[in-house]
Image 1 (cartoon, each protein chain N blue to C red):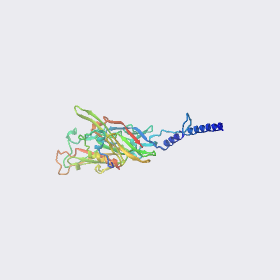
Image 2 (image 1 turned 180 degrees about the vertical axis):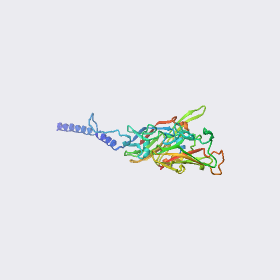
Image 3 (image 1 turned 60 degrees about the vertical axis):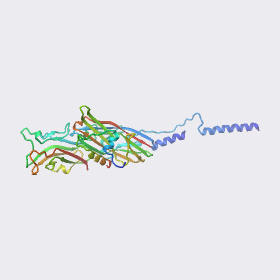
Image 4 (image 1 turned 45 degrees about the horizontal axis):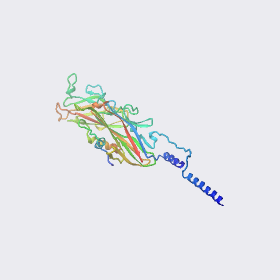
Length: 190
Length: 40
Length: 162
């Protein structure tokens, strides 16, 4: 009887080990699972960054799947080679950012102000000023002094916002003298 | 904010001041254009 | 472990991202009037002092730009017409209406007209790629205009999508 009890006890210990295995107390398990991650171009990404559907979307290009704002003679889709000097140029509906994910996100775009100034401090003279301002066309924006960005809160899944651009260039000598060749940073956080 | 940003907002963001005194452009014209773009 | 992996896969697959950061190029150039989105290109007329090729369009019908034979302005009490001084062209992406506003002592004495005789002050429509030849009509028959007065010192062109 005693021996039989012992055997049962041993069985109980083995059984306990089996339960432990079920909760993950094991040395090694190899289990292959499919995890598929594809790199989409900007238009099809979870954060879609794309030229606007309208005619002014031509001022933005898609190069290797990445959006670029291109108001220069490198943009073959537009006849003009740049903004006029001594002028204010506005380009409405330039590009679109859409949340194609499943979470609501806060979208931040920075900087919004791009500035190139050419001239001398002494004697003081200005050869050229080019200011480029990005304008959100969505109802919610805010100045954040800490991050220096504009935020568009509450971009729900499927929701999108369009961006415009305003450029100020002066004086006449700004022609071919000043240029914006920069990057904008687009961040979406859930 | 639900209103269009003004040139002053952009200057604050970039910590710059754009001197328009030598141009035919004025702040009212630029702010009006920013509002037009914002509402586009 | 297997369950977790499946969960992660599902998360990626449905796009429940927590953060996306992307840096994108922005390039903007300042072009001369001849090649900018609103093209303003002067003809080789004597009265065009900057044709917009390498600069911004400028016209001068004053003693500062006298003709070789000595003309230094329009006649008093007369209507003077200058054909084809410059071209306006839409080198952007949308149809636009171009208007001009003039500033000076007698802006109403100066009229810019396209080839059809339509006044630029009333706005002329330009499709993408379309251009208009602009002429100038100066009417000094108004008695309020005196000899040696400067009629107009600058004009502003507005091009706005329709």
